[in-house]
Amino acid sequence: GENVEQHPSTLSVQEGDSAVIKCTYSDSASNYFPWYKQELGKRPQLIIDIRSNVGEKKDQRIAVTLNKTAKHFSLHITETQPEDSAVYFCAASISSGGYQKVTFGTGTKLQVIP
Amino acid sequence: DTGVSQNPRHKITKRGQNVTFRCDPISEHNRLYWYRQTLGQGPEFLTYFQNEAQLEKSRLLSDRFSAERPKGSFSTLEIQRTEQGDSAMYLCASSLSGTNEQFFGPGTRLTVL
Image (cartoon, rainbow over all chains, first blue to last red; front, side, top):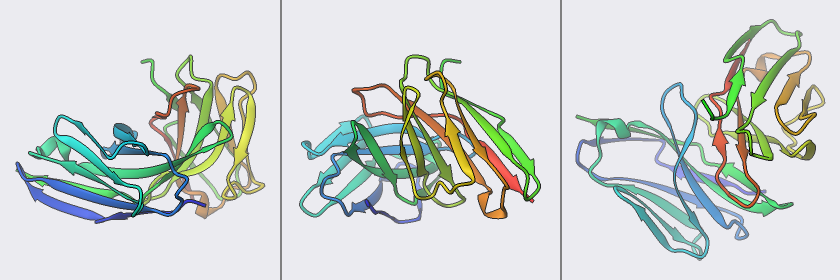
């Protein structure tokens, strides 16, 4: 099955700096890559996603890049703010029986220091 | 609140007892998923329903686990003869056919003593 590795496990940045989280996946059939943000005690929420036919996607301060050949994708957060502090999960998804079967990474705890 | 809801939010039980959790998906969503999340890990897929049909189960879902979605709306996850290793957050998510985004509920945190 699919295996997703995520690095780093923890990341501390000063407010205003950029943060980068990297993930690799194993199954070349994966075609959808969502990123979820989970604040302490709260549900995971989708912040950005990218399909396999796109190399980069940006939404305000958040961007995701995908390298299908190398099977890795990254999340970039610019101008970080304290409210960006949370655990971020990358995921890789394969179409299976008509639905997207999602495999999550182990998470990155991001701390933005004011 | 029109999001995914789960009940109870917390459950403490003794080893060997049975527990049941409920998930109410977003009303128009026909797809429903159960995940388990342990501390420091991402959610792990347990099972998937399309309408009332359970179409896929993970190998993580032992014989002690059973899930139902009798009318294609809410779902229940039952764990029989709980073990300490079952302690985790159980997350439910739902989505609509033809879309990729899964919307998560707040989870049920299970503690087995």
